[in-house]
Amino acid sequence: MSRPDYTRTSSTNIGSRGGARVLEGKLAIVTGASRGIGAATCTNLASKGCSLIMNYTSESSAKLAEDLATQLSQAHGVKCITVQADMGSENGPTHIVATALNHFAHPKTRKMQLDIVVNNAGVAGKTKIEDCTAEEFTWLYHVNVRGPLFLMKAAIPYLPNDRSGRVVNLSSVSASMGFFEDGMYGGTKAALEAMTRTWARELSERCTVNAVNPGPVATDMYAAAPKEFQAKMATYTKNTPLAAIRNDVDRKDLVENAELAGGRPAYDTDIAGVIAMLCTPDSGWYTGSVICANGGMKFST
Image (tube, rainbow, N blue to C red):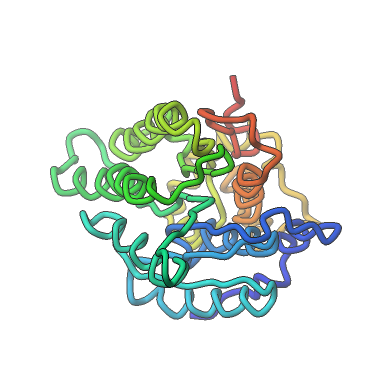
């Protein structure tokens, strides 16, 4: 499967605007980094001078992750490594940090600083109450809730001690919008938002901790979603200020689908830009919050 050349996208231009590399020398873990929001986030962070530990889950994503790592290293002069680990497994998050140590720790002192953690990896499902199963519940909560928790537990010894660290958790508007059949999935994202607030207090001398809550995003997952799903979301999308389609600007496939979907979803670079903003030094007085990165589908209160 081929991927877009992210080094030529607008996210890279934004990231290096004015030649600014505000994350020069920083190190970030990004989970779910092989595609979609994760890949766009890696691109944005790398353009700002940040080195990366890029996590992916399945063998089918290996080449995507490795190609992107090579692309970003060559384009921005940063060090990027990939690591396969299942965020839903008990040992997957620990393996990510152990791999980071092997590649970035000082050879003698074994000291390493993790400046940024982006908990992006996640899975989704839409299930009515009567169709819920223990197996799906376990799968959703292990990946979306336990995974970020265990990754933070493994990362704590390596976070900065001067409040310069940044943690960004990927939530969803499903945590608060009450969408049909989102009881389990929305519940996982509500749990992640609750952990965001707690971690902001527990880690206040180490890092800021925030979450972002996208609505629909034009990723492979969105493209594969049934047309019925997009039609059900149309009412919400029509009331989303920034989702109004622009025929001369937006992607042709999104323009053609806009009548059914009620407008356009976010581009992955839209969300990556908000994530990257929260990772910069300028966001140092902002913590414990959920940023409404959804074009206005849900306004912040």
